[in-house]
Amino acid sequence: MKTKKIPMRSCIITKEKYAKQELIRVVRTPDGQVIIDLTGKQNGKGAYLKKDISVFEKAKKSKALDRTLDTNVPEEIYEELYELVK
Image 1 (cartoon, rainbow, N blue to C red):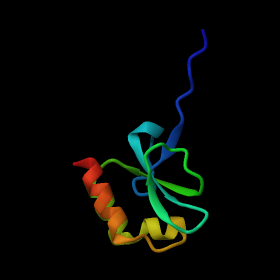
Image 2: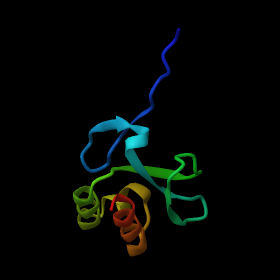
Image 3: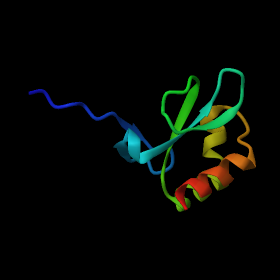
């Protein structure tokens, strides 16, 4: 019997590879909105973050999400990320 392949993705802050389910995906949709994609299937440019508050703080401070998604990430997105981990 064939084993199912587990999709791996890299956190943009820690550069470590994790299973896709262990990360949170933030997406810039084709119309320019920035949203948190809990399904992992939303259209648009995505960036993955480890589910850790210190990673979110580092992303906010270094503006890594802004650079990766080529847009300004609203403050509300960071607040939603904090709420998801709590």
